[in-house]
Length: 256
Image (cartoon, rainbow, N blue to C red; front, side, top):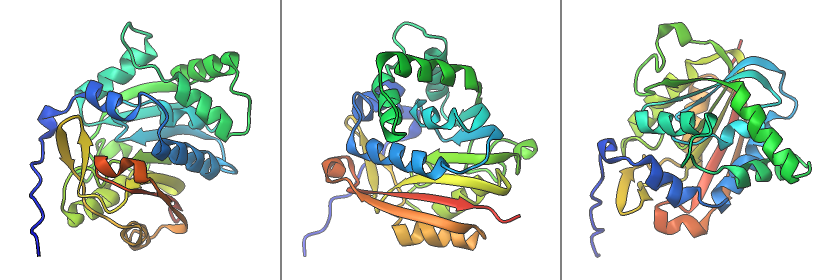
């Protein structure tokens, strides 16, 4: 039996927001078509909330596009300062900020609306207005955004975060617990997870993943007491060379 080559994992000190955006968000790839559709589907029927949180957002704003109709304010939180800077640059329309036009258009298509040039610009403008805070967070901490944030969001989204910090599945489960602590009783948690991945690639660098399966995502949510869990798996063979061939999406309600 041939031994599998070991993976030389990079540190997040080596993280480049620009490289990540170039690798995954130069166009709307399969995983994000699925992610945006699941997000749109999951939000339908949810009540309007005062504040929604996208935590572990990286340098990305596109997962906020579907939230506009459901939250008065949207907060974005991430551990890496360069990621937060990329979001701020987009909000402030700075030169060189990433172009999210195609993702706004894809969101409108997922919603069943018109992706006209006017509507795409309007959705981006609305999102800029709704994002009222871009803040640091560390989901490895019991209180990822400090004690004051515990249970303070009726809608929390987190994409490719809890599993994308360590190869240790116990770390994934702890991250999910910390993430869940931010959801208010009766609130909703929506997540995206790289399926059974040991790494994900950004340029020539490899970053760790916990290798969690759909069953383990379900078990983690169930162990935390979440109910009405909607779990979906989508095949993404075009991403195999980047470390994952499927994505696991979940929506769950925190008990009162």
